[in-house]
Image (cartoon, rainbow, N blue to C red; front, side, top):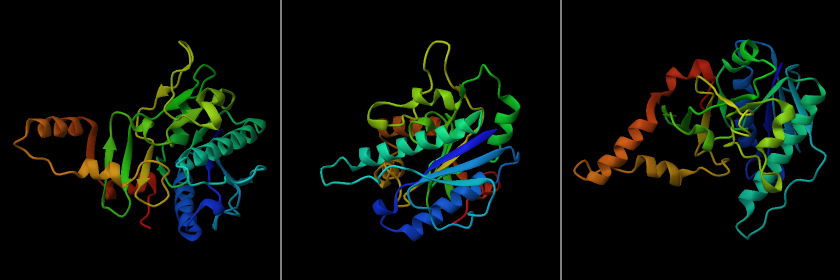
Length: 259
């Protein structure tokens, strides 16, 4: 069986808990849209979000046994939040491993995922496959009618990209509990295979992202001067890396809802 692991930040470091709970509920709804029912969802949290999934047998709210992060004014809050996220993933994965779960997928609490994942894992899982990573995925500027299909390096941008055996989760960690979702090659014989389809929609500009924000999107939307050689090179690079996709074509597979 596959378990989707969703680390949820504490209410104490969230500026708008009601809005954040809406994002989490959308993520859970997306996960539960799987075409193959052979899965469960583990939400690792300090406080349980306001949710309609409390009585859903597929969803477990696992409250962690360590203190919420304490933020500061020294410019290190991103890494403090990432450490909290990494600890929550470990906590949930240990729970999954104790239940005999064969694979886990990490899902950020504001993203949406493909409904094909559970079925793919069910059909392709073997003792010799460590897991998969998603090189392709969508970047969705919240509230827009389109998303960008990233063809090259989605796994370096979004945490909803790793499917791995629980006993191998330690390979994904760096220093200070940092879960490094970019890793996919551990040894010559131990690695994650590339998932053959885009796994997730990364929700951007929603006020809850740890890292990628409107500065990155402004770079992507910056006006190109067609007469400039450098601009043509930038445009060519973007066309190789991104495809613009209307959101209407993604709603069924990813169960993405407007907020």
